Every structure is written in structure tokens, then in C-alpha cells.
Length: 280
Image (cartoon, rainbow, N blue to C red; front, side, top):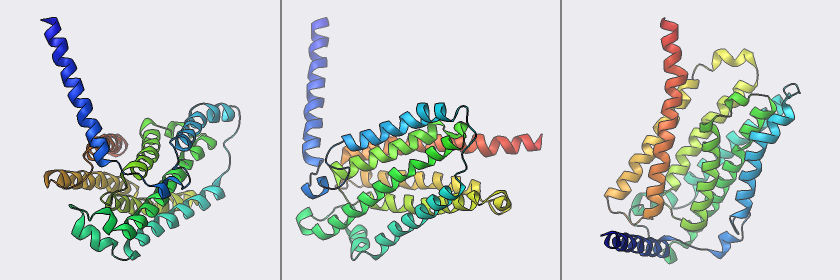
């Protein structure tokens, strides 16, 4: 009996392995030009960046700041937030001004044109995806500023997981998928980040701006709506039997579902509990 169970288990594992290998062979896309760009030749540059980031924000930074006063990085933060606002705005503008990109996404999202018939637009999308990856790498500085200002309580699991995951996911997508479907999700995210970094810029001006920042909770709501839209978009692609990388679709669905849960918990804890306390 044990031998039969063991044999059946091995058969299931073997079939699963073959299925995954077939999917990898069918869905992964390689491109020598993209591989020649910064960070894209191998996983090691991105792994190194993430490792240094985690080491600094969790160990080196807090230890370095332990017996020091919070650093005054106001003007550095103002510059950083202004650059991020303009950078994300430029990414959105790229999407709306690149010839035929919107037309292709509207007409061929479910069943993309063969890659050899759409080389120009795919190359433009790869370039924009690389800049989007760069914006996610720059996002890591958010946490560095928290550490330098001795705001370690804001270095939460949600914050760190969000930043690390976005860098890794964007790199993986550009390295191995290179499809056009996720462009819409990137544009939505860039719009959200335009608003978010505008808020951070105004907040960094000082306490006198707080009365104008009543819309902070609506920013979190925008992020939650973003995840809901991306989830519905993925469900549409899947249920419509679209020609879309299934493995990355499943990964995106699981990943965004976790983001949605974490942001909902953050929103409930930050705003709903505060409202309850005010009532009492």
C-alpha cells in the first residue's frame, strides 16, 4: 500500500514538473538587448541592491542612529519627492504619447500581435518597463529616510515587503515576460505614485502644511482601489482565455491579493480605530 502511494506521488510530481517546464518554455521571453541594460544581465545586481537595502534599514542604519539625534534631511526629502513626482508623471505621459501603444492595448490586450509584427511597440514598452523598475529602486530611499530620521516604527512589514516585492516583481517581469498586458497596471501605479509623492512633498514642507493634508486617508483608499482594479483586470484576462503568461498571472493574482489584505488591515488600524476612539 505504501509503495503504491509513493509511486502515485512520484507520478504527480513528475507530471507537475513536466507541466511547469512546458509553461516556462512557452511563456518565458528572452532578449539580448534588454539583457544588456543596467541591472538586467543577471539577478545579482537586483539581489545585491535588495540585500544592502535590508541590511541597512534593519541592522546597520538603526545601530548607526542609536545614539544620535535624528538627521535633518528636509531639503533632501523635498528634492527626492519632487523628482519622484515628476518621474512618475513622465512615465504616465510616456504611455499616453507613445504612438499606437494605447491603440494596441485596446485592440490586442487579450490576444497580442505576434512579437515579430509588433517589435517597435514592444521595445518601447520594454524601455518604459525599465524606467518603471528604476522608479521602484528609487522608492527604496523612502525607508532610508525613515531610518535617518529615527522613524523606525514606520519601517513596518507592509512597508518593507511592498518595496522589496515591487523591485523583484518588476525585474522578473522585464527579464522573463516582456508582455504588454501589465503596462496598464504600471500606469495606474505611476498615477498613484504621482499623487503620493505630491503628498509627501507637501508634508515635508513642515507642520504649517498639515491643515492642507486632510486627504491623506483618501490616498490609502486610492491604493486599495488600485489593487481591486488590477485583480479584476487579471480575472478578466484569465476568464476570457486570453493569451497571457499563466504563471505570472497566478503570481500577480496571489501577490496583489496579499497587498490588498495588508493595505486593508493598515487602513482599518489607522483610520477606523482612530474614529472609534474619538467617538468614545
